[in-house]
Length: 194
Image (tube, rainbow, N blue to C red; front, side):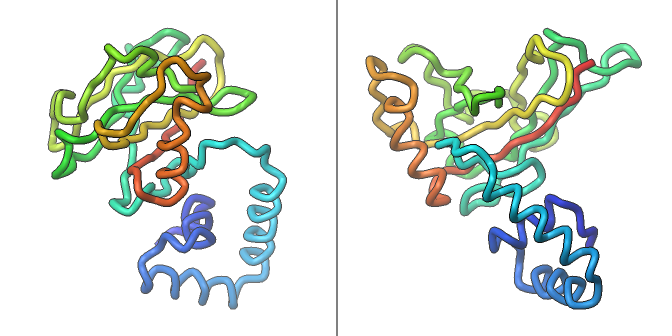
């Protein structure tokens, strides 16, 4: 098991399987530099701006089902993504895909913003997305800014009430609470845009 920052974040969140958690704890007992890294990561989490969206970092499974999000086809004509280029986010198939709403977010300097849906008519169940290699394929366009872009997908139940007349934070309040409680599958991924 590789002890990446994502693995350490997962350990701090209590999201690792017991054997993996024990391996991390053993490595921390043996490596003072690794223990120091955990202290830095904890401090970053404490100092992080308070964003109501509790979205797990890239690589850390989200929700009770352990959802992971994987960028796909990010190399375009031998180069990297450019602003506006299309790429895929791959979402593992879930048994209840026909009851889950697809919510797409992108992180900005001031926090997460819901990019889809923005109207009541934009009601898409996970099961409606095409499948490739056992994963649902969500095609998105890279944002206009160069650099690392962080994307997320949340999958609340289609039955979740959404007050479309309310401001964005109020509109998604029930989904926010459910993500924080681990009840709504949610995951993030990063892409590099040049």
